[in-house]
Length: 162
Image (cartoon, rainbow, N blue to C red; front, side, top):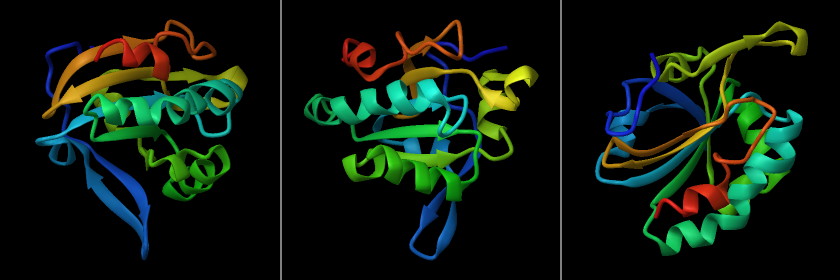
């Protein structure tokens, strides 16, 4: 069952690239005392994710900061090496967006957001969504009906929640 507005973030460990290599991040612990926007994509470098979803948060990053958001986090069921390269390729890292890999789908499954699309080669991936999290509690939750669409989970849509 999928999480809903008012739920706490589930316990899960994601991975990011640090100065000395991969670093583990407990997302629930990381969220304590912070206002976060977390968005997820079906896969790094996939068309809608690369051309629409990540760019929507790069465009709106400063507006989120002005409205008190401490951090924007992009999650994908990819390894931290791919997430680091993709963050550079999209300008997300330069904009200050944190790129976290969920290589075992631990966070994705805990949210109830996992799906498979074998014809597209996507197995154990994440549905497209965005959420606003305040001190570990989900205060806004936007899930797209189709993985190829980025409307209610884009940056501009999430700004309306603040």
